[in-house]
Image (cartoon, rainbow, N blue to C red; front, side, top):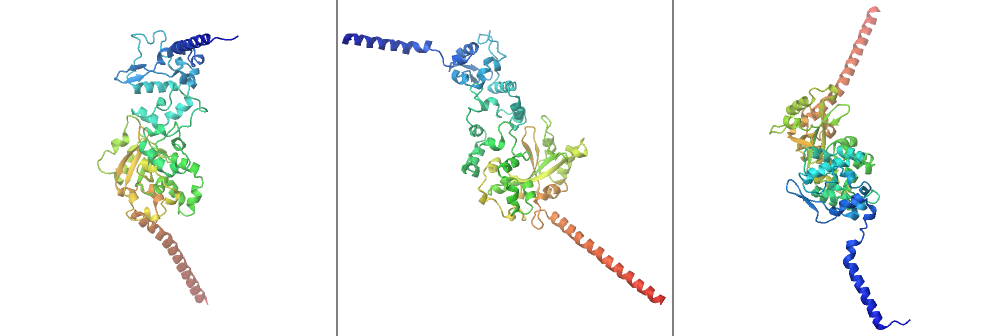
Length: 438
């Protein structure tokens, strides 16, 4: 059947009109793609919270966005738990009505409360986080230490399989200078694409200068370190124990000797302040640097009430002075190999000396010390790993060693001489007796 030109025009007009109506009315009636994945209760929540302009004024005047992207939430791991899975404290019957608004003092207090909710499902992860320097900072009152929501969007959390690998962007928000130094270092430019979590871990982040865990992280990749250093470095084991990696592998860094306070001769764990009991800070409140006598008194006070096996003592360690320097590592060929850098009179590395203890927030608390403290009775044992006869800053060690060497040589020599003389006398006496008898 042949269609007239007029009929065609009428059909086109009708189609155009229908399309126009669909464009105007379509969004009001089309189903949200997230609707089919969410429960009716969650869809009811999103009727308000999926509006981009949704926000709330908090007690301190801050404005908190209440907007939830429906599609992102529907695709998240938390969607199966539903809104009430995390917001069980909200009464859906009265929520949103005048006079029943949820009270929030600030964004920070809200984030802290939300972190406690995460514990219900993520117990193993939260156990690691509880042992981190980040949580220690939170407990100490820090307003910047990261909480769960600072790194994870609770309304768009994906599974580990689907999520993009963690990068350094989040860490940069607080550690900008360190991140910049790391990016320019051998680890940031050699194509390894290392991330912060590769050395510092993700949830149980420790303060870098507390304990020896970071040295263990270095060895986990550089497994041949003990063997390779032993080929050219005298007493390599002592050096690896008492010298931080960055002290040699950042040749331009400023160095210091840090006398770290430990407790328990057997277990040897870093001594730590308790929240609300700033014992180290109080005992080292002097304006002058600590000397040998002050160190002895400090260790006695820290050990008071503990058994002999739990007494406090110090372990010396040569390290760089800042976190930025610790991350600005150079290529292997540029590492310090000249023994005189440290083992010479007036070595720069030994001009700065500190005594440290783990603070209540998980980070070390340091007090400056005099250079003479390194030759004190309380610390001399802790710096034995730095010692080389004739090439040290601690002359008393040279004297003691020479006395020990002299004693080791002279005493056996004197004993042998007395033995020979005694044998000669006995032989002469025997000859006289024989002569008298004849």
